[in-house]
Length: 307
Image (cartoon, rainbow, N blue to C red; front, side, top):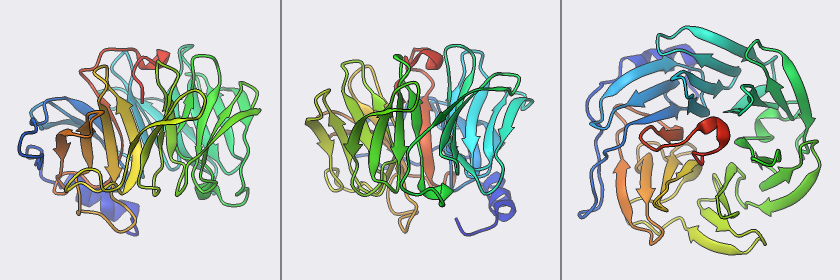
């Protein structure tokens, strides 16, 4: 991550596009899902088919968040902003952040607008397809002078509230529609982000906390994946997650901060902590920060795909 963007991008484009190298447990199943992912360390957005072949790619500077929209377009955040592109790689619209501000998350909304998390002023921006900012929500941070330390993943809920991962504050804060803090969940180590599950529980990715924790509506811990619960697949920096209809969870095990190349980048795990499949392929990918399985039904603009 210390290489220049240009040099890293050239390396990423030149990567071998061979099938995914999987290293699952002996009784695990091979990867069989097509997926979209943001490769933060590889400076690339990838679409991969169920056989493991890359079918689409788009260069991006440190992408963190990524979505396939109902019309097939791809929306993603990168450190300098957010952008929507067609499959033919035509830019539909984009938002560019003024330096030294950063953008680490975005989300398509049901009204057609896009939510953008702007670190620096520590604000949420709601932006129309024409690029107009129609709403600004001021958030709370303990690091007002350090944009990179403020936020990671942000999600608007169906009730209009926001779940915000305040990384260096080591918390997940839930805000109402106007930016008032109504709940705080401790995320020791790093507050990367959280998703609200259909049963009202909250699944928290703790980043460098090396844990994935599910809390009920009263704040009680009801399930946890610890750093060394999975043989041969230690949890490092837990980034984006997706909860599947069968109850399994897909996890991006981001390998930055000293662990690149040492463990699988993505895996699916059951509630009983059995790995179903995993991707361990540093020839093709680098550090994966977020993923969307493309064969899971649901409309991302209506929070029907929980990630």
